[in-house]
View 1 (cartoon, rainbow, N blue to C red):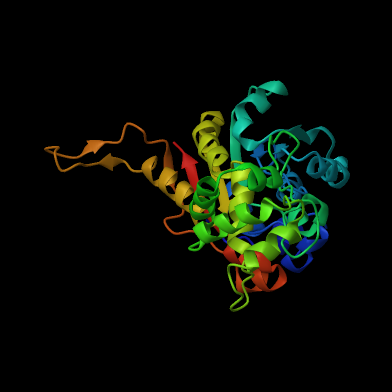
View 2: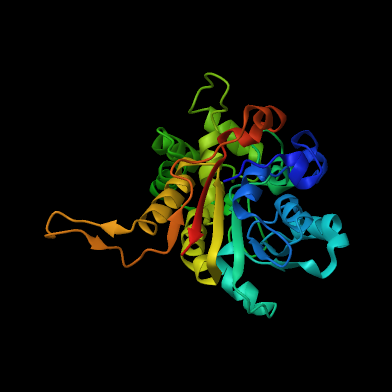
Length: 325
């Protein structure tokens, strides 16, 4: 990959990326654009439009973009930010796992020249108390990323059995005291159902004492968010679906923020990039019948120190990229 200078590529510097959209600051923008190489006449998919930051970068380079987001508020921000690009950007309200259906919905029959996903929760979701994602602000215990999500976090916490909650906290949050927290939440809700973020955060703190900078409720809130929005299930389905819409030579970039997400992407890209596979019971190695890609990032690409300084949420971002054969 050519290490593009952001000033040369976009006419703006990393220091000014936060002014592109106050809704959500895109991470690893320079690196993503360097891999995807969007240009005039190309058709690209931004499966997680957010505030339109990455989409804008592709549009600035001359590409056409189909941008998806399951959050109507995010799409409204994209319309505000990207209106000057006219028909070169098309917005669809849906989860990225439905990418093929979205392309069909807008009548787009061409194969994509590139695609990207920027996973996890957006800056807007974390900062908006009314969305219920933050344990540091008072708000309804919601955590849904879009109106199509069937259950709120409050419904999950108030209705599920202790064993089910413990499994969620362990599977999605890797919380070592998940069983104790789950049992305590079940006891508390008998007298007062959980309705707000601070109610839940305070209850978690009664079981997990605060030590160090990390808030005791961090893993529990993360786990609930990932469960409510079926984030890992959606990711697995998208990884299997999006490649069918990629043209030969098209690149597929995924940014993750959590080890569970990154592990899924890492394994999928690796399993579908290996030319040969071998097993102990086989007399010799065989060509991989599931090979789809050429792996472009043997190791994940991470944010520079400068970007992390300007946008602390970039510190856990990992970028992996493949190229369709």
